[in-house]
Image (tube, rainbow, N blue to C red; front, side, top):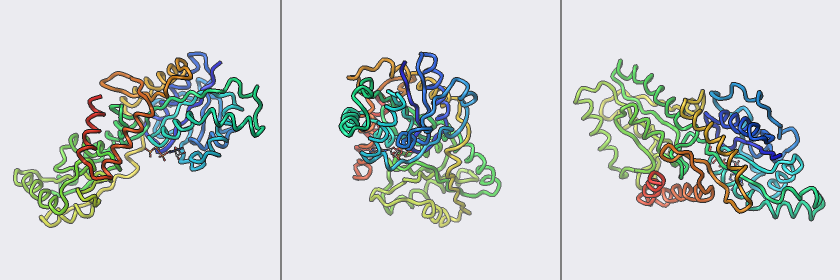
Length: 366
Ligand code: ATP
C-alpha cells in the first residue's frame, strides 16, 4: 500500500487547502494511505506527530478555505544536508515513499534536491546505524510531485499558479472600493500590490480595473523620464473627463537602472500635477480569504493528477510539476520549470529585460 505525504510550503495562497483535500481524497480513492506533513519542511525534519495520517472526513469543507490548515513554514534546517537527512529518516520510519509538495519555486527546488539526494541519504542512514538494510529496502526511491501554490503567478511552464486568480479577484475588489472615494472626491490613488519579480498581479489588476498607469518589474520605464510620461498620461485622462486616477505599482517595480520605483515617488509625481493623492498598500489581504472557483478547480484537478503521477512514476521518471497549459492539466519537468523561473528573475537582476520578456514569452507560448 502506497503511503503519500502532502505538504504546503513557502508563502500561503488560497487553494492550498483544496490541494490537500484533493490529494487526501484521491489518495484514499486509489487505495493509498495519505499523511499530512504539518508546517512545511519543518514537519519532515521534526517527524513524529507532524506526519499525521489523514482520513476522508479530515478534509471535509476544505475546498473553499483560504490559507492552509496543515500550516506552512520557511524551514532553514531543510536547506542543510543534516535537516534533509533527518527528514529522510522520519519519512522512512513512517513508511512514506512519496511526497506531494505545494509551494513556490523555493519549495520545489528543495523537493527536487531532496529527491536527487535521496539514495545517498538512505546510504548514510544505514552506514551510521540509524536504520538497517531491511528497514530501508522498500525505500530506495522517493517519488516527488510538485504543485505550484503562489499568488504571484511567477512559475514558468504553467499558465496559472494556485491562488493567483483569488488574489487578483481580491485586488480588483479593493480597487473597486477605493474607486468610490476616488470618484467622489476626484482623487488619485496609488495602489501597491504584491509581486517581487513578477508583475502579473499588477498588470492584470490594472487591465481589469482600467487603471491609468501600471508599473511592473518586467517592463521598466526609463529612469528620470517616467515621471513626465506618467504626468502626461494622467493629465490626458483627466482632460477627457475622468474624475479619478488610479496607478498600480507592483512591489518589485524598477526603472531601467534597477532603482526601485516606490509608491511614495509615484505619489509625489501626481501631487506635482495638482492631484489630491493617497497611497493604499494592499498587503496581506491579497493573500487571504476564500479561493475563487478557478483556484478550487485548479487545486482539485491538479491534486488528483499529483496522486495519479505518484502511482505511475518509475524510479527513472523525472519529478513532475503539475501545471495548466491552454486549459489542459499537464505534467512538466519540475527541474526545468524551476530553472526557467529562476532565469527570468536572474535576467531582471542583470537588467536584461529583453531576455526576461522572451523567457516569459516562452512560458506563455509553451
Ligand atoms: P514563495 O513563492 O511564497 O516565496 P517559496 O516556496 O519560493 O514560496 P521559499 O521561502 O523560497 O518559498 O522556500 C520555502 C522552503 O523551501 C524553505 O524555507 C526551505 O525549507 C525550502 N527550500 C527553499 N529552497 C531550498 C533549497 N535550495 N534547498 C532545500 N530547501 C529549500
